[in-house]
Image 1 (cartoon, rainbow, N blue to C red):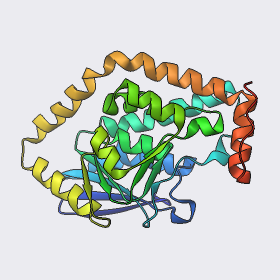
Image 2 (tube, one colour):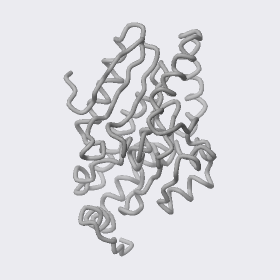
Image 3 (tube, rainbow, N blue to C red):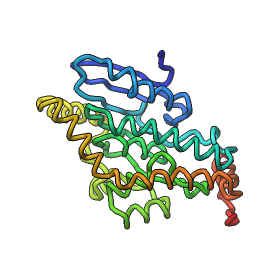
Amino acid sequence: MTYKNLEITLEDGIAVVTINREKARNALNSETMLELRDFFGDHALGIEGLKGVVLTGAGEKAFVAGADITEFRDLDSQQGADFARRGQQIFFLIERFHRPVVAAVNGYALGGGCELAMACHLRIAGEKAFFGQPEVNLGLIPGYGGTQRLIQLVGKTKALELLMTADVIGANEAHQLGLVNYVVPSGAEIAKAKELIEKIASKAPVAIAKVIESVNAYFEATHGGYVAEVSAFGECCDTSDFREGAAAFLEKRPAQFKGK
């Protein structure tokens, strides 16, 4: 598969995957999601001697500033559920990948971008990175696993606060909460990610793969949560509030929600 929105470089066994849609703040459109599915579900499995993957965004402003709202603003509940389910399945490929996947967060990681970072095994944040799940501003909820992984990383109480207020937090607060592993000077994110991958690569590869598998298994009891998220995302897609929220976002005006 030829990638249009992913830029792949391979050096010393480390693949750096850059989401290259800088003009759109690297938003996750359907084409980009399909390319991520192909890379983690097929292409990367055939890279001989692969030590790990660094995932980052093009430019200095955004890692991934969200999903492409224009692609799902008109979905009904069933279409919305299918949309969320496909996204979850792609992010599961990343979460379950047999080599370490490290997010090098070089700017805004919002909505689907925060969900993408959380699907990676480790997260390195630049000093100017920001994280948030602002979907309720649109009359929506996260649909790519965000309601589940945020709980796993920061705990129920703080996850509820961030999900319900749509607050955006900086790199240092994200580190304090356990959302990211390290905060580094801007521009040093990829270097730190590579350093971590090299350290992990000095260990037994089969054991590392089993660590990933076993840690993921700890959360399998929450599988029902992912199913519930899909259903709730779809139901939100049928609401007038979502239509209003999406329109307000695209028209750059405050939303006027009616609760229906």
